[in-house]
Image 1 (cartoon, rainbow, N blue to C red):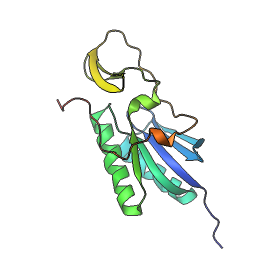
Image 2 (spheres, rainbow, N blue to C red; image 1 turned 45 degrees about the vertical axis):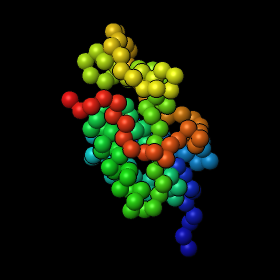
Image 3 (cartoon, rainbow, N blue to C red; image 1 turned 90 degrees about the vertical axis):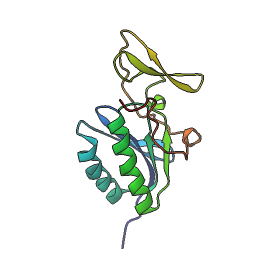
Length: 155
């Protein structure tokens, strides 16, 4: 006899170190995973464990702006899982996870969100804000448009 696994939504923030994975049941954070490793190394291990313990209803990720490579790895990994396991994939911008504070781009450029529009600005002496998982996941904030958002062209 198999035990019924809890149905959850899994959120990934892989834009900086540490990588954050949040497990949400009925929109409430029930488990938080932090890992200092590289996305390409740790995501398969983390998600393999999550699939053993939970019935995953949806996948969510921070689709940018931030590190190009981190965004690409997260997107390809989650999009593959979404297709292979027929699980919907949603996205939300990185500002959702850092209280809408500037995000480092390149040099002195930072991404900022002003009146809902993401722009780059030259900023001095900005203290980076750590990304945090919200205690409550508001599904109305998530987008079905899950393509990566790089913010600026590749350099």
